Length: 151
Image (tube, rainbow, N blue to C red):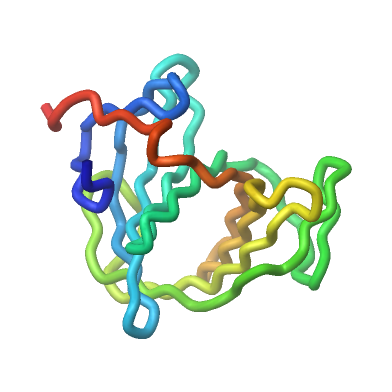
């Protein structure tokens, strides 16, 4: 199973929850890249991101409808402390599906990891016209099942 090659409209199961792939974006940063899929939960229509790194690290993020988290070394979110783990700048190289981005758009990202559960991550992405906040967790590849090819 190569998670870097999933397609729009394909269905996947993550921890026994079914999702449909809405879009696919490839980000470059220096000599590396990662793929981000926007997913829609089939049961409740909630939107998620699935980040797949070339190292096979996979993170499932729930998109939050909040603003105003300040960038600093440590952040308290939902009574949990997160510390800055990684930051950088990604540049869009390719995309497909429904999205409001363009080729070569850039995003500054900030990844915070929970001090109590190293699999939990808080992500802040700063785009030119908006800030997007999501909370996620590292997913084991064994918890992901590709259900079908795109329709």
